[in-house]
Image 1: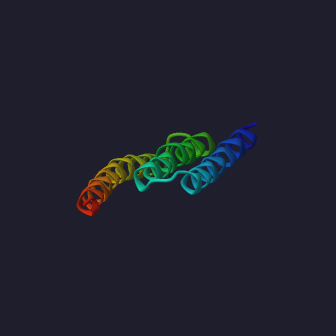
Image 2 (image 1 turned 90 degrees about the vertical axis):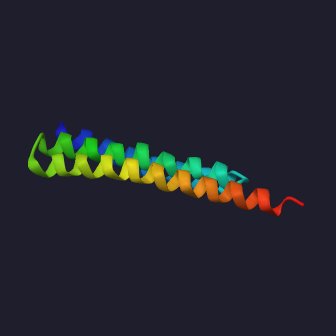
Length: 96
């Protein structure tokens, strides 16, 4: 039973990544594409962490995985914010 739950969580993580890829291809502006990237950070990595906890329970390894997820979540948010500001600044400079 645990193996099936882990397989579903991992398949869902891969599905989230493909949805984000399709979204990035479909969306027109760079700012909109950043939403697709952020979706992978939150949904895809969250499902991977959940799969780790289902597979192993609360261990030192899964706690490290959770810490890494939180660090990437905050780091990804900071990088995405900085990138969005750079895109907005560039677009403002391009307007005559």
